Image (cartoon, rainbow, N blue to C red):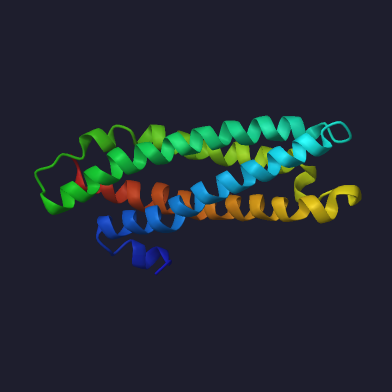
Amino acid sequence: MDTETSWAQVPLSQLVDHIQVKHHTYTVRELNLISALLSEHTRSHWMRHPEFLQAHTLFHQAKTGIEQHLMQEETAGFMLIRAHEKDGKKSLAPFLNTIGMHEEAHSDALSLLRKVKETLWNGKAPEDLDAEVTPTLGRLDALITDLVEHIHLENDILFPRAKALGS
């Protein structure tokens, strides 16, 4: 059930469960794996390819921001949505007041990850690193693709629907 029309119809708790299980779990796993791979590439190759140093810094900045953001969504926003759905008396105001912050975090994360990709030869490894680095670049690209879908579900479907419910 990944079409916009279907996610616009389901209870919000089902949508946040989907986001958390599919996108948040994947994101955390991939951030950790790419972090380890990128750290190893940087240690091994930074002298011939100093761009690894910048990519490493940018990636870890993105990783930290994304991890904090996911924690905030899961422990506050998503919990409030589930509670509101069970008991309409639970106010969504604390979550609604942070939507702008969430949208900014989404934009920042996507921008940083795209900058990492750009720094790393726009996703096309040089010949001397191709076999070793290309799988990592593929994972980074898949993470960006997933993040775009994840952000769409939140910014374009979840947030407007939550706002429509009011406080």
